[in-house]
Image (cartoon, rainbow, N blue to C red; front, side):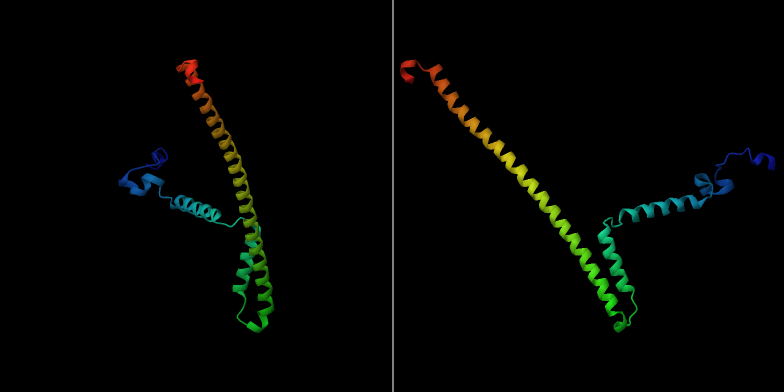
Length: 146
Protein backbone atom coordinates (compact mmCIF):
# COMPACT_ATOMS: atom_id res chain seq x y z
CA UNK A 1 0.00 0.00 0.00
CA UNK A 2 2.96 2.36 0.42
CA UNK A 3 3.32 2.58 -3.35
CA UNK A 4 -0.22 3.90 -3.60
CA UNK A 5 0.26 6.67 -1.02
CA UNK A 6 1.81 8.93 -3.66
CA UNK A 7 -1.25 8.47 -5.83
CA UNK A 8 -3.67 9.46 -3.06
CA UNK A 9 -5.12 12.94 -3.16
CA UNK A 10 -3.30 15.46 -1.00
CA UNK A 11 -6.48 16.64 0.69
CA UNK A 12 -8.21 13.85 2.52
CA UNK A 13 -11.16 13.87 4.83
CA UNK A 14 -11.60 13.77 8.56
CA UNK A 15 -11.08 10.06 8.93
CA UNK A 16 -7.36 10.08 8.09
CA UNK A 17 -5.90 13.45 9.06
CA UNK A 18 -8.50 15.40 10.94
CA UNK A 19 -10.07 18.65 9.92
CA UNK A 20 -6.87 20.64 9.49
CA UNK A 21 -5.69 18.36 6.74
CA UNK A 22 -8.63 19.41 4.60
CA UNK A 23 -7.51 23.03 4.57
CA UNK A 24 -3.76 23.39 4.79
CA UNK A 25 -2.39 19.82 4.97
CA UNK A 26 -1.44 20.42 8.58
CA UNK A 27 1.06 23.18 7.76
CA UNK A 28 0.53 25.89 10.35
CA UNK A 29 3.60 27.78 9.13
CA UNK A 30 1.74 29.09 6.08
CA UNK A 31 -0.80 30.83 8.30
CA UNK A 32 1.97 32.08 10.57
CA UNK A 33 3.94 33.51 7.65
CA UNK A 34 0.81 35.25 6.39
CA UNK A 35 0.09 36.75 9.80
CA UNK A 36 3.72 37.91 10.16
CA UNK A 37 3.55 39.58 6.75
CA UNK A 38 0.27 41.21 7.74
CA UNK A 39 1.80 42.52 10.97
CA UNK A 40 4.82 43.85 9.08
CA UNK A 41 2.55 45.64 6.61
CA UNK A 42 0.66 47.24 9.51
CA UNK A 43 3.92 48.34 11.12
CA UNK A 44 5.19 49.78 7.82
CA UNK A 45 1.94 51.69 7.49
CA UNK A 46 2.37 53.29 10.94
CA UNK A 47 6.03 54.25 10.44
CA UNK A 48 6.84 57.94 10.46
CA UNK A 49 8.10 58.84 6.98
CA UNK A 50 9.40 62.34 7.75
CA UNK A 51 13.17 62.11 8.17
CA UNK A 52 13.39 65.10 10.51
CA UNK A 53 10.61 63.77 12.72
CA UNK A 54 12.23 60.34 12.85
CA UNK A 55 15.51 61.95 13.92
CA UNK A 56 13.66 63.73 16.74
CA UNK A 57 12.08 60.46 17.88
CA UNK A 58 15.49 58.77 17.87
CA UNK A 59 16.92 61.52 20.07
CA UNK A 60 13.99 61.27 22.47
CA UNK A 61 14.52 57.50 22.70
CA UNK A 62 18.20 58.12 23.37
CA UNK A 63 17.25 60.38 26.29
CA UNK A 64 15.06 57.65 27.77
CA UNK A 65 17.78 55.02 27.37
CA UNK A 66 20.45 57.03 29.17
CA UNK A 67 21.56 55.57 32.51
CA UNK A 68 20.14 57.16 35.61
CA UNK A 69 23.42 58.86 36.64
CA UNK A 70 22.11 62.42 36.40
CA UNK A 71 25.33 64.38 36.90
CA UNK A 72 27.28 62.40 34.35
CA UNK A 73 24.59 62.30 31.64
CA UNK A 74 23.19 65.82 32.01
CA UNK A 75 25.18 67.39 29.11
CA UNK A 76 24.37 64.46 26.81
CA UNK A 77 20.68 64.63 27.69
CA UNK A 78 20.70 68.40 27.12
CA UNK A 79 22.27 67.90 23.69
CA UNK A 80 19.67 65.28 22.75
CA UNK A 81 16.90 67.56 24.01
CA UNK A 82 18.14 70.44 21.84
CA UNK A 83 18.08 68.14 18.81
CA UNK A 84 14.53 67.02 19.67
CA UNK A 85 13.34 70.62 20.00
CA UNK A 86 15.09 71.64 16.78
CA UNK A 87 13.62 68.79 14.75
CA UNK A 88 10.07 69.21 16.06
CA UNK A 89 10.06 72.98 15.62
CA UNK A 90 11.27 72.61 12.03
CA UNK A 91 8.49 70.10 11.31
CA UNK A 92 5.87 72.40 12.87
CA UNK A 93 7.20 75.35 10.84
CA UNK A 94 7.01 73.31 7.63
CA UNK A 95 3.44 72.28 8.43
CA UNK A 96 2.44 75.88 9.12
CA UNK A 97 3.98 77.06 5.84
CA UNK A 98 2.20 74.30 3.96
CA UNK A 99 -1.15 75.11 5.54
CA UNK A 100 -0.57 78.81 4.76
CA UNK A 101 0.06 77.92 1.10
CA UNK A 102 -3.16 75.85 1.03
CA UNK A 103 -5.08 78.75 2.56
CA UNK A 104 -3.67 81.27 0.07
CA UNK A 105 -4.55 78.99 -2.83
CA UNK A 106 -8.06 78.62 -1.41
CA UNK A 107 -8.45 82.40 -1.14
CA UNK A 108 -7.23 82.88 -4.72
CA UNK A 109 -9.66 80.26 -5.97
CA UNK A 110 -12.47 81.77 -3.89
CA UNK A 111 -11.71 85.26 -5.23
CA UNK A 112 -11.68 83.99 -8.80
CA UNK A 113 -14.99 82.21 -8.30
CA UNK A 114 -16.62 85.22 -6.64
CA UNK A 115 -15.40 87.42 -9.51
CA UNK A 116 -17.01 85.07 -12.01
CA UNK A 117 -20.18 84.97 -9.94
CA UNK A 118 -20.41 88.77 -9.73
CA UNK A 119 -19.97 89.00 -13.53
CA UNK A 120 -22.77 86.49 -14.01
CA UNK A 121 -25.09 88.32 -11.62
CA UNK A 122 -24.41 91.63 -13.40
CA UNK A 123 -25.06 90.03 -16.78
CA UNK A 124 -28.34 88.51 -15.53
CA UNK A 125 -29.46 91.89 -14.15
CA UNK A 126 -28.67 93.60 -17.48
CA UNK A 127 -30.44 90.85 -19.39
CA UNK A 128 -33.47 91.24 -17.13
CA UNK A 129 -33.73 94.95 -17.94
CA UNK A 130 -33.37 94.28 -21.66
CA UNK A 131 -35.92 91.48 -21.57
CA UNK A 132 -38.44 93.65 -19.73
CA UNK A 133 -38.08 96.47 -22.28
CA UNK A 134 -38.44 94.01 -25.21
CA UNK A 135 -41.61 92.56 -23.66
CA UNK A 136 -43.09 95.97 -23.17
CA UNK A 137 -42.34 96.90 -26.79
CA UNK A 138 -43.78 93.68 -28.16
CA UNK A 139 -46.95 93.59 -26.05
CA UNK A 140 -47.95 97.21 -25.77
CA UNK A 141 -48.57 99.46 -28.74
CA UNK A 142 -45.81 101.94 -29.51
CA UNK A 143 -47.91 104.92 -28.42
CA UNK A 144 -48.40 103.59 -24.86
CA UNK A 145 -44.88 102.34 -24.32
CA UNK A 146 -43.44 105.80 -25.04
